[in-house]
Length: 426
Image 1 (spheres, rainbow, N blue to C red):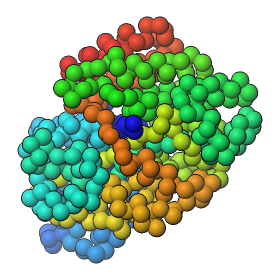
Image 2 (spheres, helix red, strand yellow; image 1 turned 90 degrees about the vertical axis):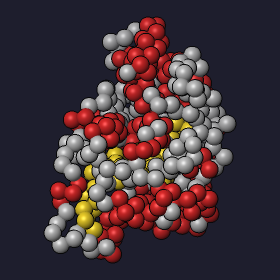
Image 3 (cartoon, helix red, strand yellow; image 1 turned 135 degrees about the horizontal axis):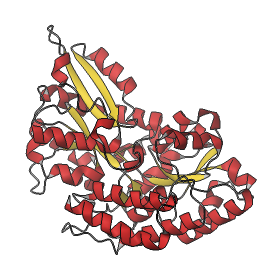
Image 4 (cartoon, rainbow, N blue to C red; image 1 turned 180 degrees about the vertical axis):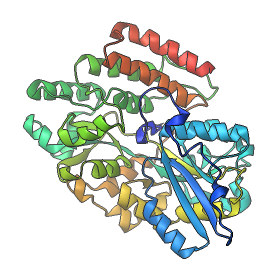
């Protein structure tokens, strides 16, 4: 069964969350920029690349009394800053993106967000994947705090030239057949490193998370009880095996060395949700045609999915909702998919020829309009829990200590459990 896991890595960096990492997050209120001629400035807080730059220009041209301020920051810090502003009662962005990994935490504070059902958003429910709609709906079903933008759809991106140099097949179907399971994946990695004396994967954490997401239970069950001995133990054991076998390049996602690795050949394969395609293309434009996309071991999955919310404390909630509503329309969602790879949350769009027939030339004409929707349809999302975000960061930090050789592998699991319990209590 396919399971879902959060796209922490869309713009995550190592270590604990630090609010001061994002200067734009904790700055002045968005209304400071409103002019005396009635022009409204709407600030959108998000992370990574949501494909908004061109859409901003088009929306402003059609709505001359609206100016849009895009604020892309670090993934964890954006969520922490939103929580801080909700508690303070002021300073939040007019539109705040929230990742699925934090949605349980924020939908439990639905009184702090505009109820989008009051704005007529209920008419969109039938257009969404049912589980996606429910993810941002309050427990009593009376408040919808966000409208979904994308879902991940998980695959594996790999460098065909590096595979060829290691004597491995390069055809995407043949590569998929190499690793039906994670055990087989590790075997392929060992073949690669033995042949090339290079690292196979980018990071242990980027192995841990997709494996965890395929398990029946993640960090928490629906009663909010920490379940480290279930899915987390399976994922952690595979990850430590990979690190001990020398497969990991020990890089940190979205930091400079990781970005360089896409060009330098520091790794040959990585877990690759739909939205990762845009990052690879932007980061390593000179590698066009050298990448391809294969199936993920273990039978599929989904890496992430975001929502756009309107904090109630905003001064321009009507204008903010109007913009959110415009951004989720098919034309904009298809444009974002083709530009940065983000797969829409509305399954009817998967049949649109603009998506269904789309092949990505950068990735050797991989049929991405077929690959990623298959991962999203029929998905049963994994429950992530209110403390999923900080718990994930705590366990990832332990994995990095193993990679950095500051923690012995045989002591790592006990440390991971201790740190996860600590994060759950915080």
